[in-house]
Length: 85
Image 1 (tube, rainbow, N blue to C red):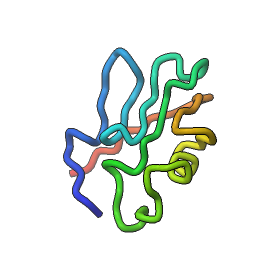
Image 2 (spheres, rainbow, N blue to C red):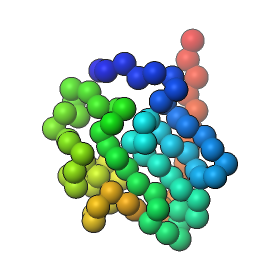
Image 3 (cartoon, rainbow, N blue to C red):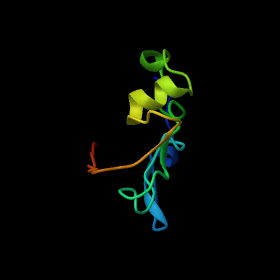
Image 4 (cartoon, rainbow, N blue to C red):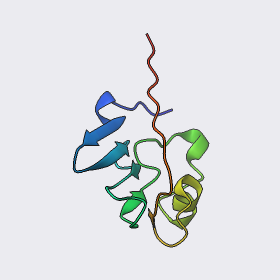
């Protein structure tokens, strides 16, 4: 797996919801009522097991369920924190 820097794991900003990776998955404000959220996958989280995906419709659909472009509407999401030593 390609090394991922800590600065690219998750980005938090009060102007929008959680962002994972270097914009691999972005959840925007009011995500349940618009299609401003998007998945630009693979970007930061690209490694051998995922090399079959390239930035295109197949990867957007596989990663986020987006069926027309990379934008999607969110019905529900949960974010968990994993801590390790």
